[in-house]
Amino acid sequence: LGDLTVCIPGREPGGTDRLDPGATVRRWRPYVEGAVTGFVLDATPRDLTAPDVLPEIARILATAPPSARTTC
Image (cartoon, rainbow, N blue to C red; front, top):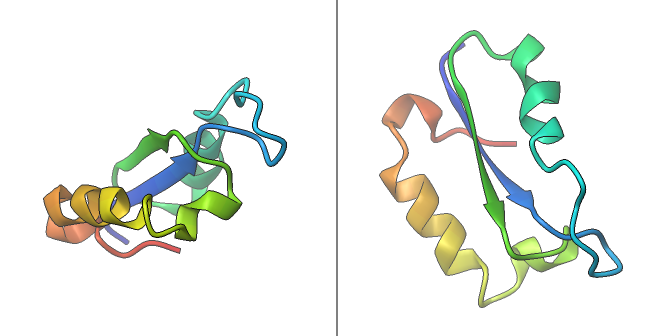
């Protein structure tokens, strides 16, 4: 139920650009009744928990509507 905000790594584990980061949003759509909003970050999947990336994720989630703040 509700909306979903997803932070998406824009680079593959090896550091190359992801060809279709929007695919992550499309994969979530069948499971979310509301809007699915994706934010592509200049990071690899592993970088999403790095100290320099976490503040950006926090900023994104802080500005997301309350109904979209629960992420997986």
